[in-house]
Structures are given as C-alpha cells and as structure tokens.
Length: 154
Image (cartoon, rainbow, N blue to C red; front, side):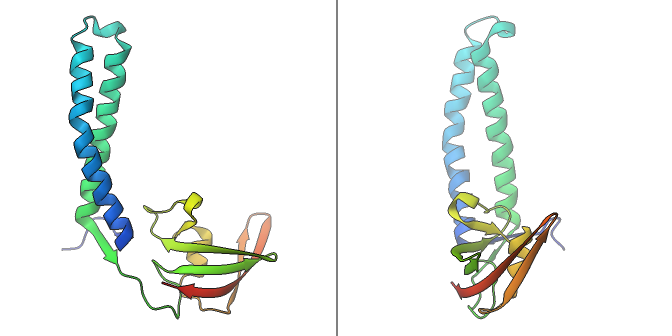
C-alpha cells in the first residue's frame, strides 16, 4: 500500500518530531485544567480566559494529531555520502565573496535562523545532486545569484 503523503525527514528531524509530541502530550493536561478552571468562573460569553484556553487546547490537539500522523508516515533518510548534496548533508557555499553553510533538510525541518534549508526551497532543490566545485545559478524574478559549492559534508 502506498503512503497517502510522502514525508521524508532526517534522523535528527524525526527525533525532534517525537520530542515535540512528547512535550505537547505532557502539556495538554495543564491546558485542559486551565480551561476547566476558567469555565467554572461563570458566564462563558464574557470569559476571555475560557476562550483563550479553549483555543490553546484546540491548537494543541491539532498539532498532536499532525505530529502523530507525521511520525507514523515519516521516512527517515539517513545521510548519504558526501560526493553529492542530499538530504541531511551540510553544504558550504560561496556567493558574492561570502561563505555560508546550510544543512539540507526536509520542508518540515526547515529553519532559516539555524541555516537549515528545505530540499524543496528554490536553492535547496537546485543544490540536490550537485558536487563540490560545481557552480549553480539561482534565478528568481528580477534577480540571479551565483553560488559555488565549496564542500559537502555529513
């Protein structure tokens, strides 16, 4: 049977999903308790605490369902060799005289602040399968950026 959705994650990303699920599972009873306490304060139509805690519970439950599905369907992709850029590899790039390093991850793990670049982003997708020394040009509307791959590591 084929999976309904294709979710590829690195081993680190899979552990992050499981950790987030565990944390939210522990947090849920506290959110529920706050909602019950707020409900006991009386008139629900003007009870901001109740509505806020109900919204938080709804968001928590939704994220728990999403995480559970992702964990169940995720395909953990182990880092490949370092001859070509693939999911899980670190890529050192040079552009405009500057050097930057990204880790190529799945869309679920992407985090620009931590230089985790999605494999489906324009640059991430362009780098997949490329080797050290290759040059690539990222063409976006109104701008072209040239990159040279300085190195690939795991």
